[in-house]
Length: 134
Image 1 (cartoon, helix red, strand yellow):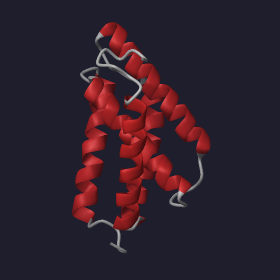
Image 2 (image 1 turned 120 degrees about the vertical axis):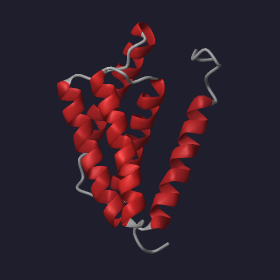
Image 3 (image 1 turned 45 degrees about the vertical axis):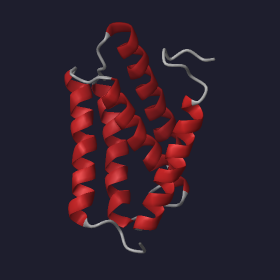
Image 4 (image 1 turned 135 degrees about the vertical axis):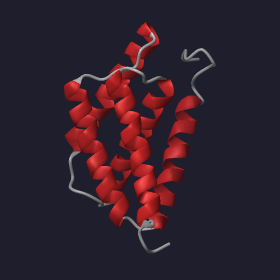
């Protein structure tokens, strides 16, 4: 638990998120892809807050804005897609997350994942099945 995740598993995790970003770039993404990319953004942000990676708060703010816009656009149009600028920005987040995966002890990944689940559970508690605030 004190060592980083094994490289093969880190590569598997990384590939999944990079393929998700490609789906969003190519216009075949859906809300699942948006949620997955949001997970990567928040994992990287929480790890960054714990001291892993160069501090880049504006990156996370901008990435969150991009993914929220993508989500809303997808809800309105049925198509979840990011433009070239959003793609590059989200690619920066994934590059940072890749670096974090290579260095962060497994115990930190477990702790951040638990925190993220707690945050998402709390956020979802205020919504009904139709995505309307109660």
